Figure (cartoon, chains in turn green, cyan):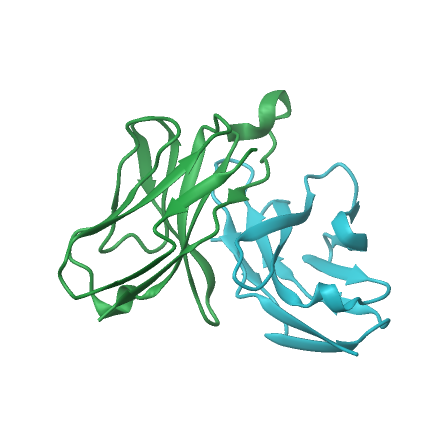
Length: 118
Length: 113
């Protein structure tokens, strides 16, 4: 089954304790992205990756790190979490540039990770 | 910079009534446009997308949206609401030149029996 998986689904942690949220897709997608969802703000992009070893900042990258060593995995790292990073996080993937038409393809979303930083 | 606005953070309709969720975008060129739906405690899934092939786009679950360049709008409609349509709906825009998607703030749809 084609899917994007995230782990953990729920996490409660304390300020300053490093954590990693994993994201994996089995669709051989080139493009992967992390979003955070906050009430009234919709989804805001944190980081994205167009392929292995290629990452770039989204709209709200401060306090986050990512890596893309393998095509299927795109972990999100919070080196020193703070309470303002309490949010619902989504990983997404898509096939880059939609083939010969050059059109943007559908993003497939993971189930989300609800993070609480105390 | 591109942006997306969705008029109405919360919309309530009666079961069987017309659903209309509004989306306006700002862009210097015609972008790619999307509607996503998020059911409670789930991730987002694509309802439909506009990629310049046709201005009226049909999606899943009876939804459709019309791209109006003159109004920079991409409103989502469904002729008859069903209880299962209750969810959060997000309009999104992507520029033509690179792989970035900007989401609107979302509209929560309630369906009243």
